[in-house]
Amino acid sequence: MAQEIETTNSDDSQQILSLPDAGRILALDPGTKHVGAAVCDEMQMTTRPLPIIERSSWKELLLAVKAIISDFDAAALVIGLPLNTDGSESKMSAEAREMARKFRLSLDQPVLLQDERVSTHEARRRVWLSDPRTRAEQKVDSEAARVILEDFLDRKLSLRRKNG
Image (cartoon, rainbow, N blue to C red; front, side, top):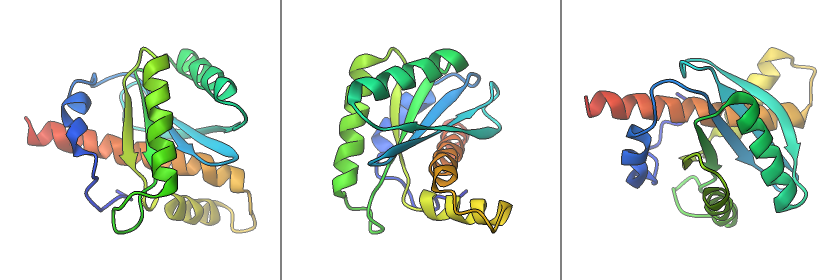
């Protein structure tokens, strides 16, 4: 698990536990210019990065996310919450929370936040290991969304085990 630090958004445990054990989940890594995206399989065991979403207007982002949710019949949306290394909020944390709020108002699926403190670092490592010659930041954005989704799925499994 890339995210070893306990998340600060543990108040959503009941919402996580209410998610079905099967069904795809979409994850987003919000950035200022691009939004990385990743999805898991029906059994929530494997993940894969998706093409990045260019970030222009809220309306365009919402339409793109709705299309992905529809294409994959996603049961939930997870948004990366970029906290500072000490767990405190950053300017981007507020933006991610606002994005989640807007998605909650616009989507039928549950929208959850996942601590993403080390996702970009881990994504860069993975991209470099897969092809050291690449400098494709666009691969990093969606790989970061994949790390966020893997961490979320690990967190969901851990909560299930704990609450038996």
